[in-house]
Amino acid sequence: MGDPEREVMPLRGWRRRRLHTVRSLATAAGTATRTIVELEGGSRSPRVGTIRAISAALEVPPEQVVEFRRAMGLPVDEEAPR
Image (cartoon, rainbow, N blue to C red; front, side, top):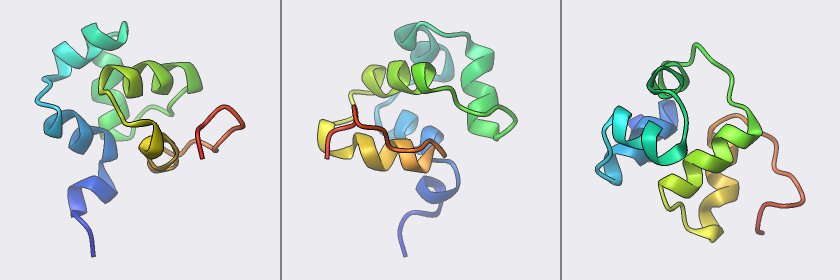
């Protein structure tokens, strides 16, 4: 089995691995701190544009964007690298 935090709270795991605080990630992604908190807590559904901005701010490697999007509950679209 993998890292339970990564499986249950993928955004929080990525954020912590990249040494971001909630506030610094929100600033880097151009979104509200509350958005990050709600996404991490599961009380908000991710929007495609928000996840694109967050994955860019977290510098998710292109080969891992598909995995990141799936973990966030988003379908993989044609724009996602394979």
